[in-house]
Image (cartoon, rainbow, N blue to C red; front, side, top):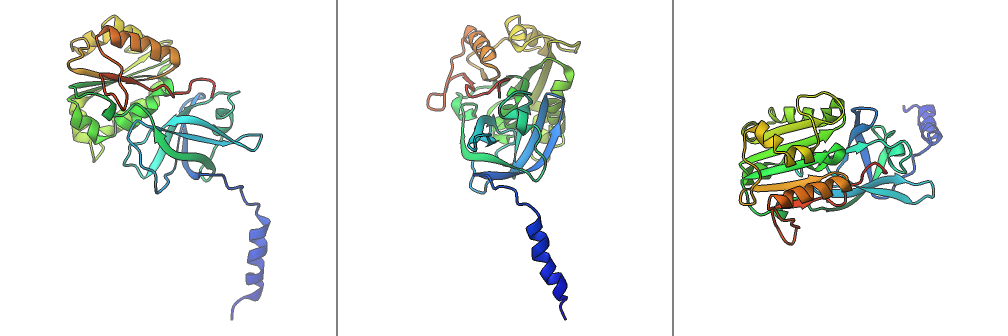
Length: 280
């Protein structure tokens, strides 16, 4: 015979637990990893209807103090085939969003608008032989997606990931990702022959020093890698960083003869203009 007291206690116990407010366009946080006191990554559930191209971004966020969604553009760091979505973020103590976002835990909800857009997609580039990913800080995120996409290696003979941070610890997210790709069952064999990783630091002694801009303009990266300078006939590039970084790199690429393209007008390089910097 059923235990009547147990049956009556269950609804009471459930009612005693305060329900979390359900967010609009909510997705559930599945994991969080803090890389430094300034950087963290997290994964969330993926909407069943979401389709995106590796390199695109979506709007994500939390509810603001005024009861309205506080959203920012975040590049999806996971590849288009992943069952979850990964994001890589800076922590800004006084940032309207990241001051709160950095405290999320597995099981929490975030807002995710399932409308991906962006210019850092291979379709926005003309066919070429060598593809450069040029990033600073969390600008690495879209390339974390693209480096794990088989299509990138099908279209280019060589992929060079240039990533600059202030300190070596800030490179750990990218370094672990690149090292893990060698054992990836989907693209491990391809990556071993085609992906070149060129990390640099600006404020701490490291085996490669200097900014992306300096290493390109002086030719140091070409000398270090034993490859010829950029040529519009063979080289393609994608750029993601602060506004100042994007402007400087654009000028350097144009100096090599490369032209800026877009989804509707493919050329030799593209820049992600929606990248959000230290104020988030």
